[in-house]
Length: 197
Length: 305
Ligand SMILES: [Zn+2]
Image (cartoon, rainbow over the protein chains, first blue to last red):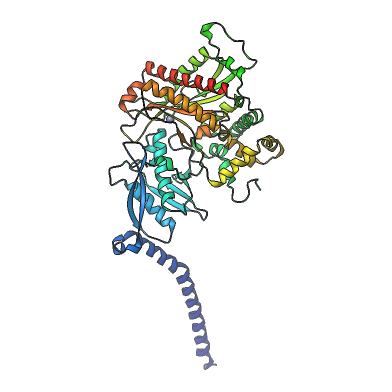
């Protein structure tokens, strides 16, 4: 009897260790990988100086800003971090757009506007979700409506052939219009005629 | 299943009713949105079945009878209606000028003047989508035009831009966000116009009704472009603005209108000089007269076609 006891005890300890190990493995793979991906992407985004000198990690994009002179959209180049995820690059593009022009052109977004979310469906339909400031400080005119919408839509569709349609959301919700004119309930496509030749 | 096959997002086509349901601020009851829907459908039926305004014959020049000449041509049995839409209203003020002028007041004032001129000089009924300072939804404005089986729809606005120097009048007609799928859908509708009526009656499916509603303006783009052209031309000669062409934009208020429809941006409230002009009665009257002349030229040319 006494001889068998430690054996059984050992068996129980071994079994519980096994269970613990399995739990640890499961926890590691379910949480650990996600965390490591997040870490990778956030380090990619927050430490651009690490790799940006390397040409393979940078993508040059064309942003469209409003020109005081002719009221048309004019291009301006900008570098963003290359990523296999179009969604990540689309988000960077919109954030660059909101920073504004470096060549003195007009950024057709109210200055406090922020990008809340950016989604891209498999069919190439991008949803750009702006903070409510896009509407609060907007000039509310047709020309302003058009400039805001197509600065974003043309920039996204021009740079990424995978983005075919763009919908604009405000504060996480679908809105009827921006300033009472342009229809936001239907997705937008690229408009060449609004770009200066 | 819908007739346009897989991948067609019918959800979008419900926006006219859905928006009413989604916007809690307006506190619209479900019943109310159904009333709107029925009014909309009434308009579509009236529009797609007969389309009387598509065939403007020589007899229509009778509409151009001038009351002042006292040789009035006998009135036809039914007067046609021009719907004028003063942009914005109520809490929705629209653009605001540096000196405090509000777009909603200017649009109403110009619209009333335009209504008076049309009623004086042409044998048309004129309906305003609002005649006082109240908030009217964009769906209601569109629905009113279709309910009256409008001959022409003119939405009046005052512009505003991020550009300090932006100035001058602009006339818009609807642009379609034509994706390949939309283009195919449109081609289908254009080639099967006769079927449309059957479809409205023959199927219960809301999708189809809403597609037709959604597409209403697409059947009138050519006429709308012509109307915009005439109005812009008159505004250009009034204000001596050169190189100002007609523009296209996906404006919500135009999309569902089942007749030639334009949106006139009279001048820029964001431009201090133009703001001063826009608040003056004299300038507003000049604008109304110019729009009227454009309208008359459109009807004349249309009648001769
Ligand atoms: Zn307006």
